[in-house]
Image (cartoon, rainbow, N blue to C red):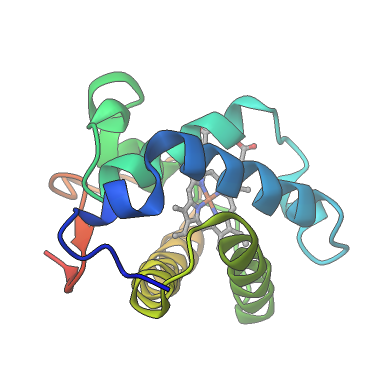
Length: 152
Ligand code: HEM
């Protein structure tokens, strides 16, 4: 078991390919889940790729979400109006923890840091989701970065 700590978190995770596998496995679980599937009624396969590209940027990889997919504000806006409940957020975390254990390299610290990001991010998604679609969120600043020490 190794934490690959001399690498950045993105490289230790296995880069974009590993994040694509993570996203794919996670959304297979989401779409089969009675509590979450209705939230993702408009799901399309591009969602899997967009989430992988977002996560790459978060964990210190290429900034493709900012350059090509609308950046931090677009990510937040995608969650407006969803009215995510705490029960749904918790289920999302359970399914993501399963996907992380299946798809990401072993390493207690690596997995802990990744899941800490998801815990932080799902709370933000839930908060934003309480506001109606189209709400002006202002400038949220650049996409956050998450490393071995957590939020940078
Ligand atoms: C760290 C946590 C999260 C991340 C990184 C994340 C990431 C994303 C991204 C990148 C998109 C845009 C996808 C696209 O452009 O196709 C998106 C949309 C969406 N997210 Fe999240 N999300 C998070 C939490 C949640 C939670 C907790 C829920 C609900 C329980 C949720 C539900 C949705 C839905 C319904 C959409 C729109 C889906 C669609 O395109 O049809 N997200 N999310």
